Length: 170
Image 1: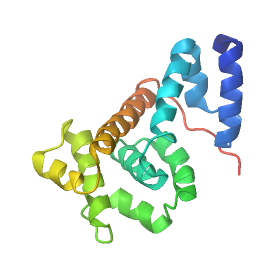
Image 2 (image 1 turned 90 degrees about the horizontal axis):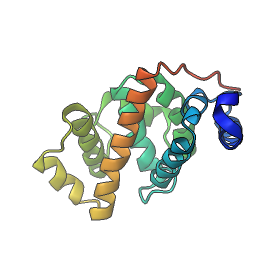
Image 3 (image 1 turned 135 degrees about the vertical axis):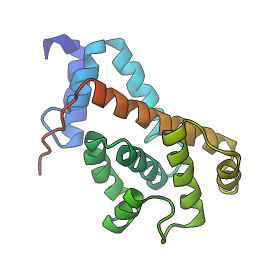
């Protein structure tokens, strides 16, 4: 792990341990970019866990993006994080099925509809924006777009760099 440098090596060790793995492949890969890695971590952390959305809502967004992008790496980590934020097995099944599945609150249906549109079309139509605006203020609306795109871009990065799934400690 010499290519990480001393600072990123320490960050990788801490984040791997927190993720429950000896080597969090995402961090050992991105850590090779030096200061760019630390800047990316800062931005990512400001969105999740440091964002204004609830952890539960953040995890719904991230899990839906991971599902839509078939990103097993993101799913592995965020199923675990989602459980801590109240995402039960039943809710996870609904996340995989989508916003039209019975059982969602109108707020969460609007949230997941926006995520689906953003991932699938790179836009959110006026009707979906209007629904979302019934439940979220402007700051939250912007954060939803940034969070969705952060994890959509991360899924692309994981796929393009062929980052393998982590071996999770049990």
